[in-house]
Length: 527
Image (cartoon, rainbow, N blue to C red; front, side):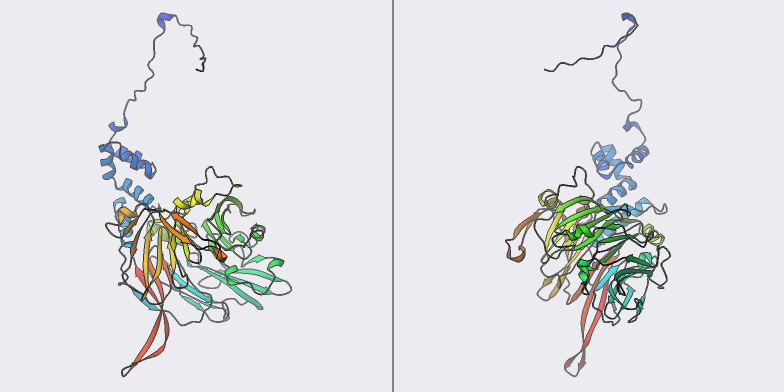
């Protein structure tokens, strides 16, 4: 047994004057002797989990929680992975009820009650996009585009506009590669290749509603001095020219450049060398928040872009279970730092999604990985130089779902909810999944609770043997009873569900139905 020596207390007092001191703590006022209002006030400073732990201590604290709308609102926000926007005007009791009713409405969505608008006729070859309750499309060949609101509400400013052929970008001797529209910031960004003495890539920044120079931009054009030689050809594919934005950040996939467009027209935040040394080059990327970028290669690489004057700093590398070809990343983010307009809208909605607790989707050829973003923010103990194996991070933080045909089966994600279309004999149905922790509580008997692990077999690439993956991220699922014909695309946001459909039109002549053409319609299910 180890021996210990303790310092001897020396005193000048005579022995009969030294009294034994009892150091047992006897607080003047115990916690439970305080007024109930003080209990609630003190508990409101605790995280959600600690509040719930306190409610199991005794009946008095449990009753305090049950009678406090503020404490229940804190727990409800955390359970739905939301952040509060406090305006000081709406009582907590009303906020709490609205939050619970909205969560319930998502699992009780009525696909038979919707609003449909016919889209204007316009040829396009570069797909369709949904952002901030707006729908936009563009055509690179005709140099034209359009944007229309999908859901108009008094509290939201909307933009409706079209660019006739040749007007989207007026730079002569150039080819348009990508367009980004951000209604919340009134921003239009157009990537084009200039063919002068030196082939150069540029990004024009304008106001979305007027084509004037954006008042917050450091300049009208973001520059790339010269296209690297290994990319110096005339056939840059559209999959290689993805342009994405988040607040002050804009990133361009082809060269993996990131700009702070409000402070500089040039970029020192470059990942070109990293991408060049990759086996497959960048498949896709996404902003997880203003200061973090996730690049999808043969693995998932998380970078800090907090300091835009330096090359992005690698934070962690997450290995995938095996090589996945043609991965695409889907992560729409609620950015609360975009502009004064968006901040006003956020306050009106009373809450926004927590970027550290949302869903990210990786779609491959026949599967989709639904991943909780918490894994990309809880980095304690992770060494940058050591890649993290799939078995250490993937199974408990994700759910792998079958997605057999990405051209006919569509998927979209927002916050903690995922919307997926899947094939049935007569067409397609919709599946809504809620992955928030309180989904089971707020479902009020609706939907199917999935907590048990599920296993899916994924075929290997190039004829290689496949692998079985078991994942266990829990969710609540609701499947619509309505069957849809041809769904071109689907979206979900905080306000509703949006379905882009192709409709075959006929005229009836006598007893015959004669084909007259096709029309595109946007169906809105308002929640």
